[in-house]
Image 1 (tube, rainbow, N blue to C red):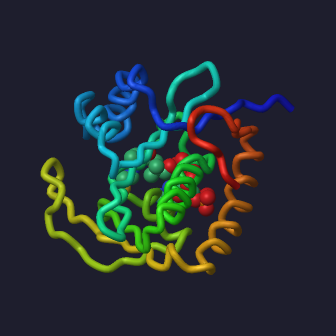
Image 2 (image 1 turned 90 degrees about the vertical axis):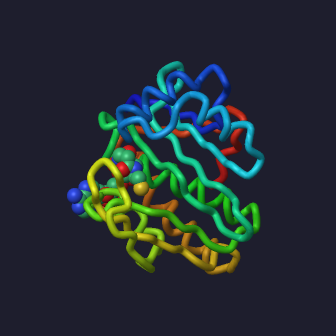
Image 3 (image 1 turned 180 degrees about the horizontal axis):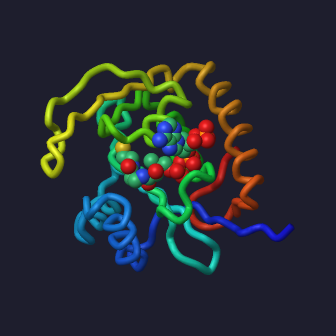
Length: 188
Ligand SMILES: CC(C)(COP(=O)(O)OP(=O)(O)OC[C@H]1O[C@@H](n2cnc3c(N)ncnc32)[C@H](O)[C@@H]1OP(=O)(O)O)[C@@H](O)C(=O)NCCC(=O)NCCS
């Protein structure tokens, strides 16, 4: 069976226009090109993009390292590629990087109605710790605040390993193969 090859890497400046377009499709235009450029230039920001080899960018994620916390600022997969395990792949790689940076916790905000995002976060042990009323200006929807602690504990490495088995099964099912190329070493 023919596999499609995926590349995970830190974006290059010449990919920013594509990223802004993906952002518009997935998030309704959260960050501008200048915003992505700022993230690339910020040493405390970790951006990761997922592209099809010789093709377009189909996903992106980002965290900010603030003190001992990873603030997950962005997670998106192009709608044509959702539901195949790719969102979990990006979150897996992001949290692995956060753990490698010796961060202790991860946190994020998510819309109450965002069931697929909540499903992804709960799989890796994020827990609900709070709620911000009418947080999203466009919709007036509340945000849930999620936390995942213990990134610095040995148990987290085991959790990641179990999660990786699950994700790699999903990727195989959809004939995705991850390439260890680009500037972001793919660790398993
Ligand atoms: C959130 C997002 C990144 C998930 O990406 P994805 O590639 O579809 O995620 P995955 O395929 O890895 O996993 C999705 C999981 O959610 C589950 N799911 C999807 N819709 C669901 C629903 N309505 N209710 C419950 N679970 C749902 C899927 O079944 C899957 O779990 P599984 O592995 O047990 O089947 C993607 O939907 C997206 O980009 N959304 C728009 C941007 C966004 O909202 N980002 C999050 C901001 S906090």
